[in-house]
Length: 335
Image (cartoon, rainbow, N blue to C red; front, side):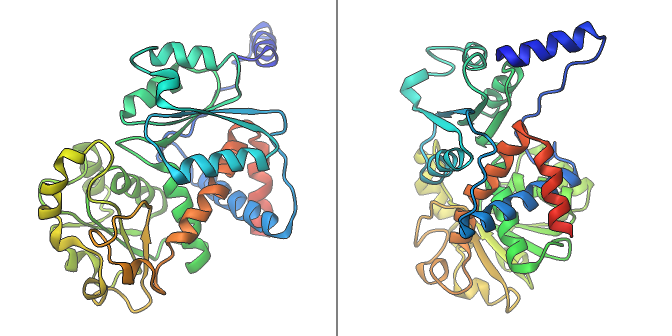
């Protein structure tokens, strides 16, 4: 905890007040509808301002620690660039720099970093590592990807959908085709929060975790099917992800066999709505989960999603350290 934060906490305790509650960004489910709308509005504002050459250094003098156990092109560049554009500084910590969970416990990493930096971002395998880091840190923690969830990607995806379909996403039918892994589970959280129809086309044996499936069925969020054609029927959006994520390389050959009928190609898209857009969180294994013609075609908005990682994550970082900015962005966006 910084000296300033410690002083505020002591002052609040001395006056009998509860200290301000730290917020993290670990999933979509912890957001209120108002917070989600505010984040999307702020992301849109940041994107427009950047294109107009308007600076927004809301985090001048702030530092972000970026913990990477999984490598990434988009995550590193967008967080590091985003922090610079907000006036702050980002520090990249490679797997061998910390050895979180091996050389040092997540608890010790969290407590030490909290003395030096204002924000912590982690991209890791185990979701529990992310949760423990957030429990032990006195500064906000951002989930930049775990094997359970990928909320930063989902926020950028929702921003892209608003750009193409308008702000109200409730009438959309979104088809997710592929592995019921972290991206599918994040889409379940988003569907529960927003209320659009979600169709999951997933091979047998690759369904989401039980807790997510139970929520999907309990809240009647859409359709789970093992038939990709049924999943994409009249869909407004067709979303896919790699069949083999990092850490699953030994399963790659079996997964290619199990997923062979779940490729997003022209034949599958023929069953979606004529105006349907195609999305992919990248990196793509071209020729496996998606064909070149579709990925590079006129329906694809994958580069919009990738670009929006920058703006959406800037919105998250600003919200966590300067929450008052979020309300201002929503008021501006609504007027």
